[in-house]
Amino acid sequence: MRIFVCVKQVPAGDSLLRVDDASGRIDDSGFSYEMNEPDAYALEEALQLKEKHGGDVVAVSAGPARAASTIREALAKGADRGILVEDDRLAAADAFVTARALAAAIRTEEFDLLLTGLQSDDAGFGQTGVLLAELLGIPHSTLIVEVQADGPRLRVKRELEAGWFQHIGIGLPALLTIQSGINKVRYATLMGIKRARNKPMARHDPADLGVDLSPAQTVRRLYVPAKTRQTEMIEGAAAEAAAKLIEKLKFEARVL
Image (cartoon, rainbow, N blue to C red; front, side, top):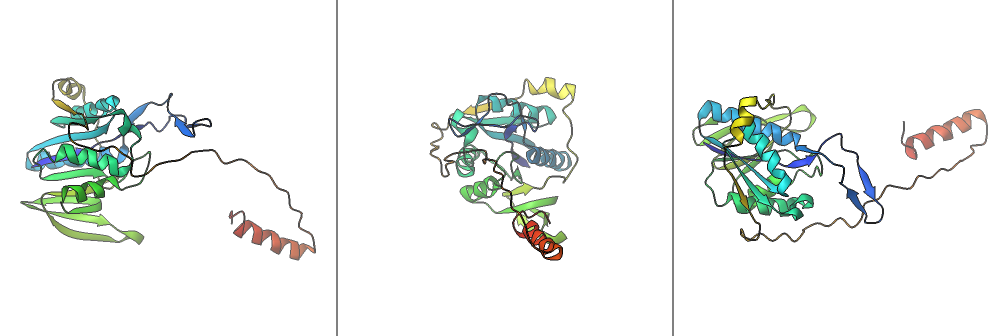
């Protein structure tokens, strides 16, 4: 079974978030980066399926040159090779552009299963996996908390609302978006880190793949809401004033 896993490089959770008032953009000059946590669960699921059923795992990402370190992390944990669609513009690309870049690289390969995390820790749209499946013309299923392989088909368990679950069968090739917590993510061993240095990682230019990086969504400006203060005196008898105060706390301040 050949499994492709999409891994995204995102700002580390302890990075200080600042908005540049002049440009209306996030100031990323002090960011450190790490693998997107939901994608780490997808990678672990791919590695466990490989250990049970054989095959190989390919880590693929779309981003600037620094995203290669995230692919190397995946290789250190056990992935067999990596693919990076490299362009600085992909650092802030929307879900559709990212999916287009990933699809162009994956389309040149043969695969049985494609895994992504449910969403990214930075944007959190939860759209890239579904868009990728549509672009590749393969079936997909989301919010997966259990995967069982049975020949050319999978039996998967989906998490639904209100504590409900759904069991479905899906034929291969297919794409699954993996829910965080599906497994226990492994650490890269020292031997794995050493081996990762010699594992192949292909780099593709989006232009060579015929990928249009024109954004489908555009952020016009980011800004910190201005802090305002307003004092309102509530007059009347104590019971009447208390009733008015409770109403304002419920429907205006929304703290009750």
